[in-house]
Image (tube, rainbow over all chains, first blue to last red; front, side):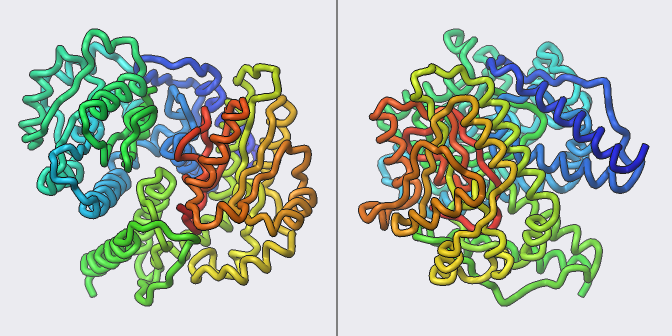
Length: 268
Length: 268
């Protein structure tokens, strides 16, 4: 097969994968990571590898800028790219940058001093990392298995994202009220609290988990409602850190939002 | 200098540049691109080049995810990276992807049929490309010169971004009303209309430029007000394409927004 034909084939497969990922615009509960049968092996030709690098970087940009919404799957061609990104320095560098930017902003906020200035943090892939779990499950390429994932959550051993821990401590030191707003269920409250303590996250003001009335709502709706309740209680939401756009968008949006990278899954 | 020291020096310079870029949180009228005197020459060592690639990709992600806001300057270390991205295939690939995603969404929108479903497009770096201008001005690294830029605008020769032209035609074909909402001034109306026609953009419903009452407003405020007026007139804003977050955020936000890449400048 000529080089140009290879590129053409790759591009058409890529479009197919994307079209598949977007044709169903209905929201879904949890990330569904589908494995596609057809894959082009990288390293066949340098040109082809470069093309995959280019396309997968483009895909990741589209994810982080919220241009693909919802998405169901990592394009199969990008499996190695995503793994290399997460296990190499790229992910760490970007996590550090978003925390640094948030810190710069936090230090410039003039706090009112009445204890009503709030910083919201999501938990999974924001404060705590589930990478040890995803490392065992092909970094998000496998079909999402809620039973297996719950077993992991119940171990309570997810490590801290170090740059987030640094920001967390700084935000507390500056005098913000810290609210943790997570899609985890109320039934995981105690194991979550234990995991947070073990990872160094203490002294938060409130931990909000999904109650029975919140099940079946999209994260965007559930989190918007909780933010709206905070505002009704007189809190001002000054900062919000999350790895999903559904942590940040909707109503009662924070004055500034900080999007942590996450190329593994999408929650609507 | 040892390799590790080089990296450490680079990282500290990098932090400095970022801190500088963010210490002033006041909004400003136009992008200010400052040139920093200190630069580390790339290609000294492969490791160093890789580190620059990693850091500049991270910087660009932070820009596209709206984590750096406002930013005044391309980090000087990323000047070559940004030029390579814009003149290589990376920019083109990402522009195509955002248009493709927007097209997939547009085809899935159920139009009401009353002619009130609107798609908004920004102009500069969204429909028309100013790359020929920026190529003459170091791709945004030079201090922004409004007099020189106005001369370029008045030529009326900015080319179409081809992938945006394709989306534009599709959106029209599907039956959306198309509104162009630009930060350009009313005094540039006729040259803008001529440029748009020359580049293939016709049959839009409305072209909104900054009137005298809009000068001094941030783009976010000006564009939010104009969207709000559209809603008051009974229009439903279903899609919005822009290269700046200030095209997309604020109030009366579109049902879906599409962020085109732009690592050259930031408009608040």
